[in-house]
Image (cartoon, rainbow, N blue to C red; front, side, top):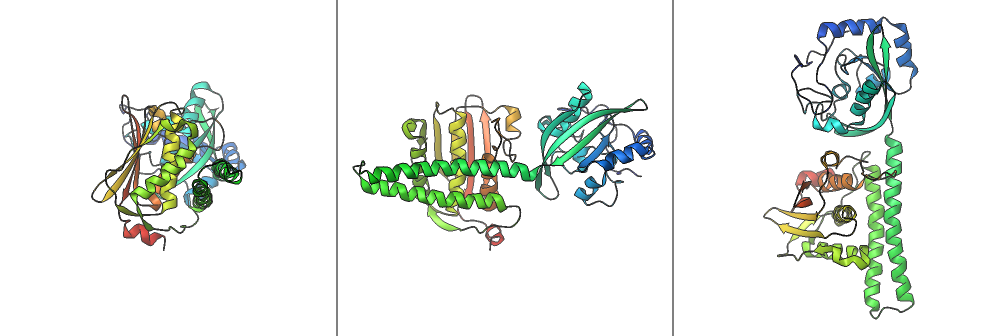
Length: 397
């Protein structure tokens, strides 16, 4: 078997943000690969598992893999990935962020696979983690359960790495939780509004009718957004682009969140619009981006500190901003837009910031970003074009 000819050269003096950068030279790697190939026990071992399996040396370089990994990568043989590290073989988007390669960038300190490998080498005990792998070439994300454990063979310390695809499980948990949570909020508000109208408690029946209409529209929109999240990787959904006044979009946000924060209205401040224009967008998706931006800010503030929402209008785009007083820790900031990443411990969280990116960028052609600075707090921004690019429009026709 031959090695990929793009392996880094001398790695002795390369710095790292997480795992050691050093690698074995080609001659030593070739000898290790040859020893593994001649060992019938290893050949049987890696064929036994129904998941992706790699055998790594002490420098986290691949010595052997099973057919499941080759099928995942669409490779006829392992010759082009032997000697690489797992993230390099799987084409992780961060594998080239740092000269030391896989395991050495600042993002690697949050990677479940890198953490499991390093921990099992240090503790000499099996380690399990979850890992979200963003693949460069196909621009897709794969959720995996990772198990790593050490093996000692002929004085060599090796790592047995197993990767189990858990995409379906993670998607089901998150979609169900997000959908039923939001659905319950809408139905609770709808029930209250109809009860007030029915009992004639309100002095303004028209206001209650408007509230009911708002909740019904939100219910329809929640179902539509759920379809987007459920089917986005299988086919392109239908985007309903139309022109809306910025003021009407903000008024809808006001209506939703004045009901959302209820008695704590003073917590959310929606700043006045300085001028008004019309923008081309899908109202359901843009409102979902705003809802997630504001809800995340409110939850991060524990509904105690002020949250601000405002809009800046430029020549070609409109930027919507949400600011709270909290600062996001660096480790959290590195993972903020990852699908299913959440600081909450319960299962089923982590679609909020991911859906901001999905809806705001992939479907609406904008840009979602954030800054988090001590003394300024955290600002999430959504820059939306005034007129949607024709390339974005053509994707959904």
